[in-house]
Length: 142
Image (tube, rainbow, N blue to C red):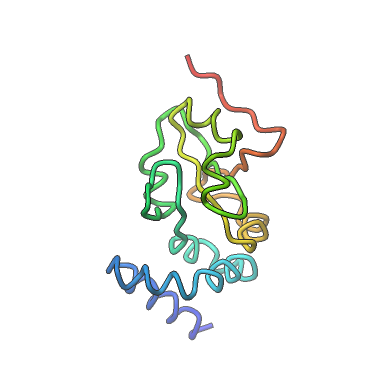
């Protein structure tokens, strides 16, 4: 347990330097996501390390914290789409509803992402919702 705690502290330190964290994340993102899937005790801390491309991040990746800070007041949940490639998900018709409302959609293109979100159902008390699920109901904004 102490080793896991020390590792997470170290990861957080690496995160302070964008270039170093980018290199770290390229190498170990699957391990972080697997940790979220398997380690419920450290899920919230590991979630801080997640990075995704999104409808608003361009070529850069965004953290869930940054995503949350950009959410319009009318948006209550975090939206994501899963797929094989960034190109495939960013051209998906499923994200149009969210784009019309100015809601950002995270692109989850790693196969492990689908397993991870089964365990991590929310972040910062905001639900993670897949835009391709048929029950997706977006609040009607005036």
